Image 1 (cartoon, rainbow, N blue to C red):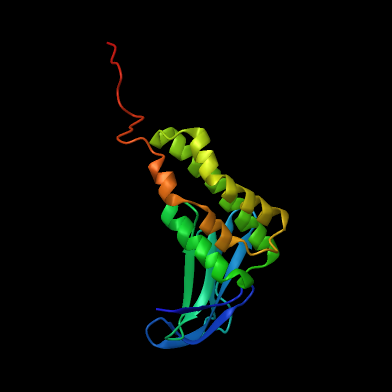
Image 2: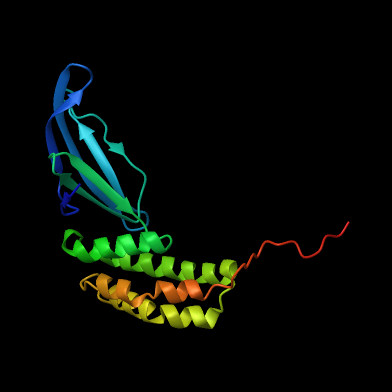
Length: 190
């Protein structure tokens, strides 16, 4: 189902939202950004009996997130991260296509977070997949350079498509040692 994404500063207001069994109310959804934690979804309803706003419901933080409206005109929350190849591909593509829905400060955070996660991913391949550090560094070097360029631009440049294209996931997977297991028992002493 297609989602029509909204800017992170947009509040999505839904009328006639169910409240209990018989009542209807107004519900407001929005995204909150914190520069150390990321993005989270908040929603708040109005108590139809008193007319006062209820306390907002808060989700956990995600590295990448946006709100949107689906084809049925319902508010939808989309979230992802940078952990692993599949999430990197999804997030980089999403950020390339939806760059204008984020502020420069949020985009700077996303570049920094992606850079940090790629460094962790590089270390993972060396420690837990037995890949040669220099080989993995050469495969990811261009991606690190582009992410650093995005950080230095303070989030004003959309480099996500170039970053996605610069990562050779096949070469990265081929850099792994076959049947490598860092947790095998070499010696037992009693």
